[in-house]
Amino acid sequence: MMETYRPIEVLAGRGIRVLDQTALPHSERYLELRTVADLCEAIQRLQVRGAPLLGLCGIAGMAVAASEDASDSGLQIAAERISATRPTAVDLGAGVRRALAAALTTATDGRSERLWTLANEVTVAQRAVDEALAAHGAPLLQGAGAVLTHCNTGALATGGRGTALAVIDEAWRAGHIDRVFATETRPLLQGARLTTCELQKLGIPCTLLPDSAVASLLESGAAGAVVTGADRIAMNGDTANKIGTYGIALAAREHGVPFFIAAPTTTIDPGAGDRRAIPIEFRASEEVGGYGETRWSPEGTEAYNPAFDVTPARFISAIVTELGVAKPPFDVSLRGLLESG
Ligand code: MRU
Image 1 (cartoon, rainbow, N blue to C red):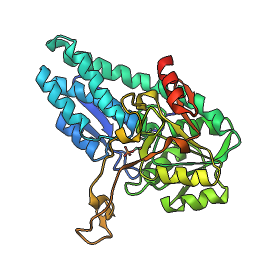
Image 2 (image 1 turned 90 degrees about the vertical axis):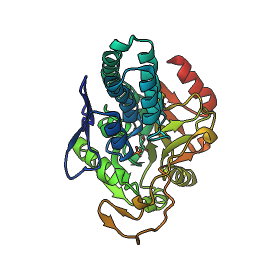
Image 3 (image 1 turned 120 degrees about the horizontal axis):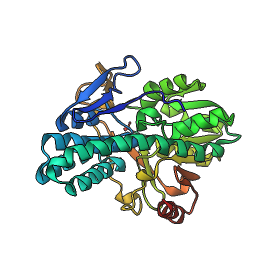
Image 4 (image 1 turned 180 degrees about the vertical axis):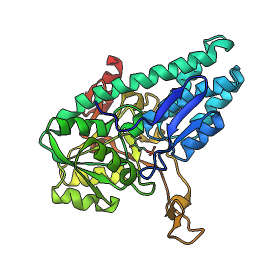
């Protein structure tokens, strides 16, 4: 199946090549990340982003770290530094921990090679995960007509085919849907800059809307379902995703529109019982008062800028994973899915 972009390439022994997502849609520019410092900066600037892709970056980043300093203490310091760059997406820290565990059970002089191999294996495995997720999710959109999505969840966010966007693509190919409404996704515009491009490449009709038009769209009946991705899913089904997701879920409930989450099982956090255990990343005020070089608020304007919010489980109709579809009550179904894997 078509992948619209290749956002990451593991250059074993040398570093990681990533597509600079802040330059899209105007230019396809690649960065070579050769040090842990390079990687951390690219993650913090959202040049590389999206929960599953951050998981791959966590593993590849530890391979970079092992090439710089493969000692126990060197790797532990790198692990903390990489994990701290973006706290909400569980895949990042989990990827780092997985790589650290693999390194610590390998002789020091074999660690770098072991982690580069792991990074390659996980990059390949992600594609199969995305395909399975798409196949499980597409039937849920039968008869939906048009579907609303938020943020960016395509190939750019996973390195494979995507999560919610893969479900949407599969449903489009099956004739279940005829259009996608994509939110702009303020303040960093992942919907307006990235999702629109991916949908164009996939040939799927797309209508862009300001985030503030979501309630009005859902009230109008123009979208028959909502599908979004996730950055961390607690064991009771509470789900962290891009800021604005919670408001979309509230409006969807009010207007009787089903609200689906699509995410790999790596995004389910067995250590988080509910929303209270999900850390939320807050970002700089400057991101709200302008974009890039353009400023529209006076210098020094303070902004409330959480990067994510948590949608309570009771607003979610189903959670699609590569192992199957979890339905409420999620405390039972998510545990069942994890045990089946
Ligand atoms: O801040 P971002 O762009 O990394 O946020 C991404 C999202 O919120 C996505 O919806 C989520 O990671 C799911 S990705 C398949």
